[in-house]
Image (cartoon, rainbow, N blue to C red; front, side, top):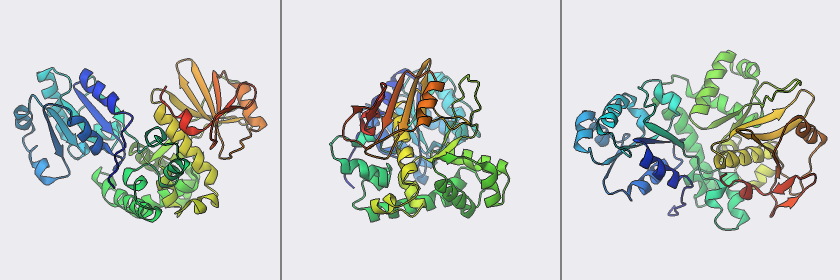
Length: 386
């Protein structure tokens, strides 16, 4: 695997280092954080990199204050920062003492909330930037539909997407799931049996794109709905599960209150469901929901400053994705058909809401008008930063 694909957020991180003392790149394990960080620090005159999963590098932080003083003028990059959350207080002291921007670049596989459970906050001193696995706007530099289909099937984790064939990719994802459950979760301090969490993750795969029913999941696992809440939050905060909340406009209508859940990487979704090829995917009940989740992840990645929801009323009016920023609202309906058509429930939903733009995203080759100002557009053209 010798390919290098530039990451879309590279310049954003460089800018954040110019205006903030510390920048954190957060995302799931193996999504490319280390490669991206090394690319960035390679262009910095003075920088030092520590991989905190290596004992030799971890030992250098036995006396953090001495290490920071020794490298006071350098950009210090700390990889897998969740291994040493107690170091945040020392980082804060150095940041306040030095007073310069671009002092720390830290990488972590857990969300800010998880890290802050055992660390002091760096509020006002640090910018958080999320790195996802590869997205359409990153891999779609050549107009080859095979590339997009491969991303959908294999998912965006670099070693999965860039694997030589589907078998190697699938086996890598199997290993990733096993390592995540048996090593990564315990390292975060959670004492949850790997088999139980594996079963919960598989159950989430089976209801991918559906409403989250905590009671039903709890009964199936033999745990309370409160425990289901904690499992859901854990997978969400480690970037493998998306909990998409319903959009509650100020309407005199009964609206669905439960969120939808999606596995954020379709490659992991397909592995958990035993889907190894496009033929397997075409014949599987998750086919449409898999496409919906794939499109949602790419759009959300391209609209990082927008809030994302779905809309569904008790009467059945529904829209797959609502993007909100200030007073602007964009409605997105997602169809897996190359000849997409929408039902009356879609138009009813538009009548309920004040929408500025409406799009239908489908696996078509080029955009075209649908009707009533609605456009049909391929996902790679929609998933561009706004």
